[in-house]
Image 1 (cartoon, one colour):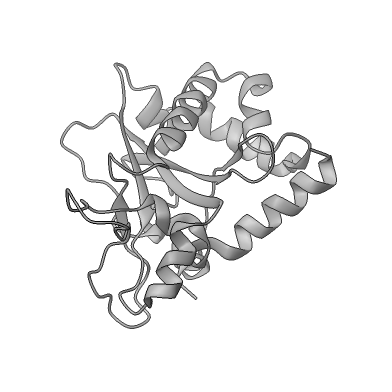
Image 2 (cartoon, one colour):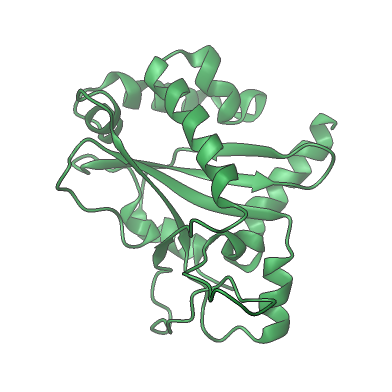
Length: 214
């Protein structure tokens, strides 16, 4: 795949967000029989509320893909080796300012990543997607389930009693969070599956708005 083609894939994956195939990864428990079964949660959401997070279902086709990506990303971040984590976070497309920001997060023992990944022991890990709105019709659900792109949040915590983010605005890696999160955008278009991780900070509300269903 050429650099230009991969860049186009990344741009499309960021723009589509929930309205793309990400919801295919975010199933609740499916019935034992019946085909085809919807992979989407059906709980209604309050109007204009931030998109709520939902754990990936064990039987989703996307779950092993995101688990493998999370394993690779976890090991790279815990190494603190820029040569390992930078390619997973965009490589040549990762801005210099973002490189420095991520290095600072990994060095600082009081940052969310310092607390989650370097506080001792094996961190807990969870993988979340965004709940799809109940207003989707059957055609829209089928289009999502048949998609080739998905996104999920990978979160870590060293706090065995701690909670996880409920909405995307709580996965903002702000100072004081007891967990750290990265977003993984995954594509199975083309001959070889590909993914990129993003570590974001800043205004949590802005992050949530960007991922709300269209």
